[in-house]
Every structure is written in C-alpha cells, then in structure tokens.
Image 1: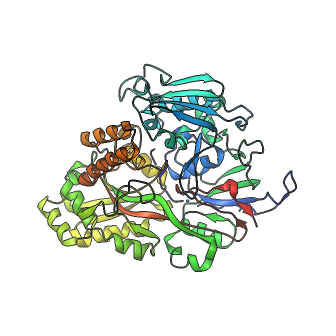
Image 2: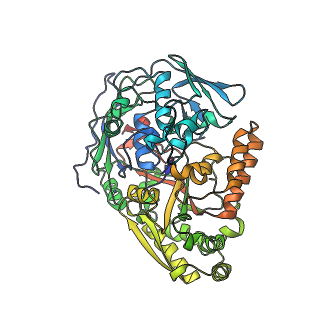
Length: 539
C-alpha cells in the first residue's frame, strides 16, 4: 500500500468551516435506543475511495465503514476472523478455496458473490489502472501478465490464478505457497467491487457502493466532509448509529477543540498539544494502547543519491536522533522509541533489533558523518505533512541533526498528506521526509515487502526506491515456507538486511491516542488506528 496503512501510511488530519453535525438520538425500526448521528475527525483522503487504490490512513478510515472483506481483525487480539468468507481453506498454502456466506449485498442491492471479489482483484492487479494496492496481487498466478512492468503493456485482463467455481465459491492459485495469504485478506485491497464500478471507476471513487455496515449519504465533499448512513440490509452485525459525518480538518488542534466542545464526538489522532493533559481531561474516554504504526524518517535513495546514497550517512543520521527525548518531551510518553522495523504488536518483533544504529550516540554519529564526507552543500530538507500534527517532532529531529552533525536542516511542511505522497510517488521531492506505516494485516511480512520491495517502487509504497537482491531473495524464501516459525526467522533475516542498509530510519512506534466525548460510548480503535464505527452508540 502506498500510504499508514494502509494500512497504510499514517497521515493525521485537516480545516474547514462547516456546520457541525448535531449529535442527535432517534428511535430505530426496532424501537431500541440505537440511532443518532455523530461527527468524527478525518484528513482529506489522497485518492478516490476505492479499496484497491487506497494506501493511506484517511481513505482507509472511510472504506473501513463502507466495506467488509473476507476476513476482519479482532480489535483486541488482532487475530483474523472470517467475515464475508464462510471458509478459506488450503492443503498446500498454494491453492486456496474461498466460500462465501449468504446474506451480504452491496448498497445498491447487488449480491456479493465470487465474481465481485474476482472483479476487484483483477482491476487492482492490472498496471494500466495504476492502483496503489497492485503489489498485493503479485503473489497470484498470472500477475506478471497484468503487470509486466514499466513501458510494457499487459497481455491479459484477468489473473490466471482466480477461478470462479460457482456463485459462492472461487479458488486462488498462488505462484508459490504463502502461509500468510489468509491473514492478508482483511486488507482493503481485497475488498469486493460491484458491477457498477466497471462503468466509471473514477465516479465510483467519489461515492462508492460498498458492502459494509454503512453506505454513502451523498457524494464526497472534498476538503469539507464525507457523510455515511447505516445500511439496514447489512449481512453482518448492524451499526448502532444512524449516521456519521467525517469532518475533514487540516489542523488537529482545531479538531481537538471541537471535541472538547462536543461539536465532534471522536478524535482518533490527537495533537501533540493535547498529550500532557488529555488523560486528566478525558479520563476513561481517553484511549491509550499499542498501535501498529511505526514512525520513520524516510530517505529518497534514488532521487537524491548524492545526499543519502552512502549507508554511513544514513547510519549517522539515525544515531544522531535522540528517540528517548522525542518520545518523552514531544509526545509526553505517548510514543515508544523504535528499536525494530517490525512493530512490537506482531509476531517477529525483536526488542533492540536496531542495535547500534538505533542507539543515540552523537559522537559516533559525527565521526561516521565526517568520515563519509558529509552531504553536498551540508544542507537538507526534512518534509512533513502539516495536517497530521508532525511539526513539533520533525523540528526536534531537525534541531538534533543540526546540533549533532552540524548539518543545516530545513523543516518543509506540505499542506496535506496526499500532497506529500504524490510528490514522493512522482519522485519530485528530494528531501528526507516524515513517514509512518500502519499495518494492513497483522504479519511481520507486512512491515517489509510493501515498503522495501522492488515491485513497490512503481506500484506501491517504496518511496525511497530502495532495492536489494538479498532482501528480495529472503522475502521470497520466507513467503514459500509453510512452517510458520521457519518463515518468521526468514522474515527476520530480511529485516536484518533492512537494518544493515537503513533505507528508512525508524524513530518511534505509535500508541493509540484517541479521545471521545461524553455523548458516545463503545468506542474502539483497531490496531490499524481505525474507528470501529459500527459499534459506537450514543449515551
């Protein structure tokens, strides 16, 4: 995914003067207490709202309310559990048979069938559609015919590995065994799409027709709001609320003040200014728990090799960053210093894996920096998106690099997260950049391949354009290993390659810091940092 997702790339949020949606209660059809409307925070999504083309946190937040996949993840344990799928079975981790439950329909009444998944995956896998989620289909047989690479044309329109058996059954044949395949299937790239999508994908992205607990209530009002309403024919557990407005902010402090005034009811991305007092102010309505996100300083290896091409320079930058100081003084202890590329909440994480390069040592950092010849002109930019509450920690990193390396660092704000992703994707921006990754699905593999693989350069989230044959070989070997423990060891070896090469610099891991007003209850945030809006009720 291109974006904290996912997972995805973690953004933050944005401004807009608009009338707040009132928090109002009404009786539902059964006469129960369920009902009412609330407003929650959002940043402007990068692309149209299509699961196969959404790789950032804001679009994923909305899609999570509009769609449901074959599996979903438990909010507490992160374990995958069947959702639209009745069963997902394999005997060899290569050929998988998926059977669907009855009762799921799209919001236009069309039945969710096997073809609706095959349709969506074929579209996402075709490079002509330039979908951010394309790399997720690379494991399926025939993917190279739909995505032959830059300057080549696809020679097929359908993945050979997908076969519709009957209305409720389809099979997936992978190029090689992949034990994590079932776990992947809750990610938004694998959501189904209705027939209506084919008529005009761009128009669909402005007002998507999903299969989830909520449906669109009008089209997306860019930079202002996205309104959704309960879908009463939803095949799963019905939403309690009648409707939700995603109010789009470009300033998290504004969103937080609106929360305190109860003009919005949930903020799942708190501004740094709130960190010192939010627990006292909100009490049990302040949610604080480990989240899947890892925050980095990204380095554009391909577009600026003069500055960042030497691994010694990258290590010097990493060792010049005081992670403890940033997490304690900037985030008030609401982040943890990163010590691995893999999140502590998924199997495969190793405490202290970064070793020396993750340890603050300004003296050694300066020695490395000097011995490597420094950076031409002795100056760099450090980009960040201003809509996500990142100014303070990015400026702190800039000051540490100035103090410890003698490097002139300019913090460069991008107005919106999507703007920065677009410039990075187009390889227009040559500065270092703030980035974060939130998992698409709970697996160590998801912290490696989508961000650092070769295929993710043109079709995915490898914004640094990092390449390593050693990394690719270990990832391929791990994917093919059916034994879960052995596969995990290989993913860790691939992780070691990344630690050695340091294409990105992990700085902190996220803790979920969210708060909600007295007007609502049953608020849960999943490990991907998304609100579980179907469970929320009014008080």
